[in-house]
Image 1 (cartoon, rainbow, N blue to C red):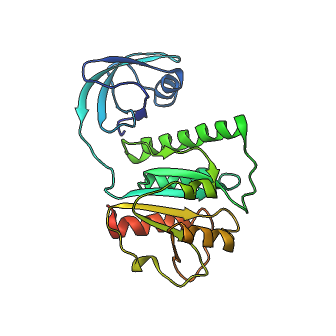
Image 2 (cartoon, rainbow, N blue to C red):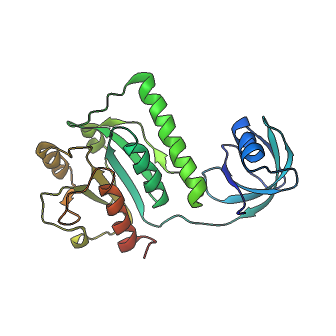
Image 3 (cartoon, one colour):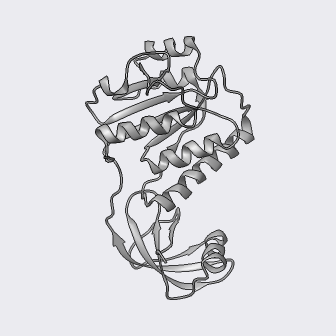
Length: 243
C-alpha cells in the first residue's frame, strides 16, 4: 500500500509532534485501518513534504511525530492563473480538481453575463471553502506540495481590472488564432474561460481591450469544463513540465 498522504494547516518541523483532527483520525483508523508505529506523509501547502510516524490513533484524534523532511518539488515553473466563469452542478468542482492535478497556480471564479449560478454572502463563502477543499484533496492525490490559491469570486470587470503579469489569453471558438502562435516570455500565463454558453461578444472585446489575446484550441466547440483543461495541458506541454 502506498504511504498515506494528508494535508494539515499546522507548522511542520522535524522532531515536533502534532495532533490532527477527527477527520484525519477517522480516515486513518476506520478507512485505512492504520495503527501506531506506521508512517504517513504530510504537507501543509507551503512547499515540502514530511514523513511522520503515528504515535497514537483513535476515531477522534491522531498524534504524529515528524521524522523526516523531504525536498520533493513537483511544481511547474509555469505559473498558470485560471480565470473561470462559475458553472452549475459539479462542473466547477471537476475543473478545480483537474486544474490542480495539471499544475495550476491560482484560480479565480468569476461572474459573467451568462453565469446562471446565483451565489452571494454566506452561500458564496461556503462554496469558496468547498472549492479550496477540493483543491487540497486533489493535491493529496496528485502529490503536489503547494495548494493552488482559490481567490474570492468577482465580476469579470473586477478581474480585468487586476493587472496580471505575463501572457493573457481568452478562449474564443470564433477566432482563428491558435494557441501555438503565442509567445511566453516570463513563465506567467492567465487563461480566461467563460461559463456554460461562453463569454459574450462584448465580454470578449472587453478582455481584448484589457490585453488578452483571443485564441481557439481547435475546430470543435469544447464545454466549459473541458476547454480550460485542454488549454492548461497545451500550455504545460509548450512551456511547463508536461511533455
